[in-house]
Every structure is written in structure tokens, then in C-alpha cells.
Image (cartoon, rainbow, N blue to C red; front, side, top):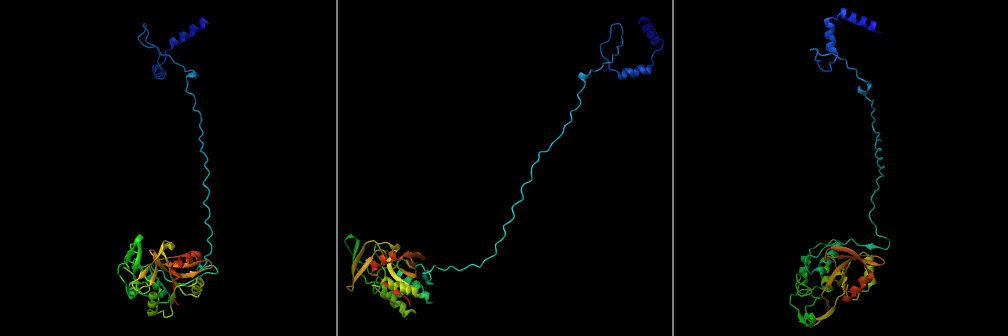
Length: 291
């Protein structure tokens, strides 16, 4: 072993490495360590990296995209139904209605005049409230009052409109008018066959409505039933009165109801026959039938 090592060493010393080879080695191999005290040139040492010091190969990666199902398709539009002709409304069997126009009273207390106006217009005779009211010859004298806010004496609603048509019926500064004046104006304004009175039976009114004749009736506002009284007119007639005296015109009838055109608010509605007959009785079944 000694002899072989020496021979090898001798051959290396006899044949020095070329300069460019040494230079290349110096350039390629990294240097480590320090300069020894015995030599002024560093010693080149080749450092071999072990497997533990090598970078691990990159782990292959696989990317996955989450599956999202597409939204469901929109529902198909409904198949349009074939258009059908609109049928006009017809009342149930047993109903009779009259084409009476609906008017709202123009003055505070002219409900009787406005009901008259609706009755005339049913048959093509058109007038304003004020034009008809001019024929009522208002008696504007103040009433004679008694105890407990009662009227002792006042005008005669059978011959004139009593009080101020713009007044208040509870104060009272105004009141109203009864059937003879309304019938007289109807006769002079195109309805010579109109007639009225007191003591009508409910059956007579329902028969007139069934035959197409509207009927003006005297009731109390909103179908109320407050206190009733009697005053003596200037001419001596006894007059039954209510502080909520009112007049409407009936425009239809059924087995159990009557249809009302109410001038107070210009509305139309149905009330039971029982309610109508009960309140109507307070004015002795007063009515005017237009024909």
C-alpha cells in the first residue's frame, strides 16, 4: 500500500496539471475553510451535498373545479285563455230596478227637491235643484218654540217650503216640504200623471216599483228614529215633524228589499223592507209616485 501510494504521488508531482485546468477547477469548485498559516494560498475543497440537504422535488398538484349544476329553466308561460265576452250584470230573479239617475242635493235642506229632480229625469225631464225649488215659495218666518226645544207653531209644509233651505233643521232655522207641493211641480214639469198622498200601503209602493215607476218617500235621515212631534201651522193645520226629516226616491224592489237613491250624499243602496216600512211609518206613509 505504501509503495503504490508513493508511486502515484510521484507521478502526480512529475506531471503537474496544466494552468488552465487548475484555473478551471478553481472556478468550478467552491472554496471552504481558511488559509493555513503555512501557506499563503487557500486550499480548494470540494463540498459534496448529501441527499438530506438537497431540495425535495416539487410535489405535483392537481386543481379541481367544484361542480355547480346550472339553474333550472324558467317555467313555461301559461297558455292564454281564449277571451270571453263580458256579460252585463243582471239582478237575480225577483229583482226589478229602474234607471233613475243619482243626484246629490245642491242645498242643505232641499232633499225633497233633489228626489223630485231624480223622478223627473227618469222620464227625460231635466231641471236643476234651484230651478225646481223656486216653485216651492219658501216661508222663511221663524218658528215659535216651546219647552224642551219643541216647535209650537211654524209654517205649513203642505203648501210651502218651511224655513231657510240653507238653514239647520235641528236649530231649527229650516225644515222642508211635503207631498202636495212636489206633486204640483211634477205636474207642471212634464209629469201630469204623478200622484201622491199619505196612508199608502207598502204593497202599493212595491207594485208601482215593479211596474217601473219610481217613488219618492218621506223618512228620517240615515233611517234613524228619534223623537217625533207636532206643531200647529200658521193656517191651523197640525203638522207631524222630525228634526231629521228626509226624503229619498226608491228605484228598485226585490222580495225582501227596496233600492234607495239617497240625495243626501248622492248614493244608491238597498235596505230591507222591514226597515223601510218602519221608518216610513213615522211620516204616515207619505209618498209621490212618478208615472
